[in-house]
Length: 498
Image 1 (cartoon, rainbow, N blue to C red):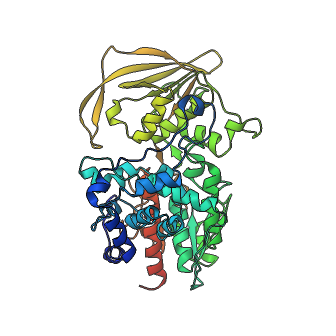
Image 2: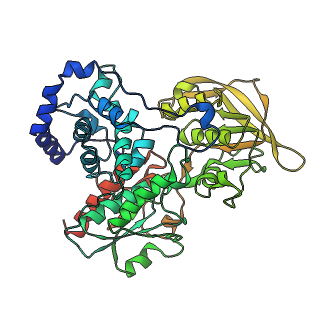
Image 3: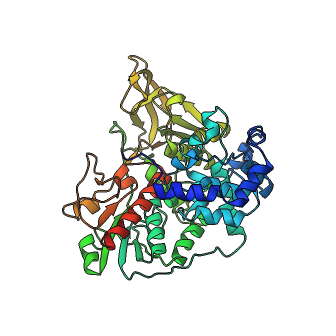
């Protein structure tokens, strides 16, 4: 199963060994389980909504050392830590949390980096509520989980603030070349893992900056790009080479790269092609895909125009179609760019929204207007070809569909007009077909995703592996990173003749 997570035996053994270390036993003696359970979760400080909508600075302020240690004390240090089962990259969560409790912040980040090279990113954008925190023992007890994501972010930021980040020594060089296609979360993770194993790793990135969706899709107020660039610098120090402006399938094919000596490949090129609605008027000026809108703002820094020479429309009545994290990013960006009415148009109710609860909460605080059980039917333009109105229809919910959410059904005769001057379509993405078209023998799924063996991330071509959105069709950053890590292990086995 592509989303299944289990704990390998070697990880179980590592966790058991660390749990019995003397320093851990001393911490457990200092504060008993009942005392830990009585502690309240430490809230993350945030900038005020009316202030943060004026700019693109980060919403969450981060923990102080005192806050981090207080929150870490809540961890019961379970002998069977189910939080780890919920982590796609298998971070030893209890150990890094316990190190925070005793004030060893650099030791904590070192534990995280055993399996995750991008902790400052994951601490900010991963859906911990559905993964590690969702599997925390507190959650099963009906209590608020340990704030694992906030703690991960804290130690990553602490390490960066100390200056030079420690880089582990690569003890064995294997003198074999591996090509990574795409510098998104899957590709970056695979590259880091393989570099630490001693391989010569090159990432080929189509855009002019590495980072993939982390760079072009996630706004500055959720993931400052300076922090992302520091994480990428860490990979470069591990020996990873990154070549930008290189479109695999056009600049060179996988077969061309084989001739240059690359012996294994990981395709992590993402799902950067947007889905549209196919509605009348969608070709009007002022109707954007979320991909283009967010790429202009994030990668091309349109929010700093004219200092950065990238224009972006600044509508007063902006409608964003969709209910996922990308829709939240787009509508909150529009608000910061001066929209008087920044609106979410979503065909289901709030309960069915796939966006993270934190993102919905922040949007509500910032004055975003939500139009639930509403769906667009057509877009209407003015005499100059610019969108000016949107015809919508009211919806009601029927039986659950394949996604488990209740199916929206139009209510006859409920059509109405809504004034808009900018529309952003955020209803999902699909893989770009360029690599499959130029790689004979690569087996694809229904919507153009690459088919893989989910245990190894191997494709139908020996030596070629894939992960992230190119195989999932759109998923979370941490799932993509889990794919990259799993693929790196399989590539090592393949190149080692195992």
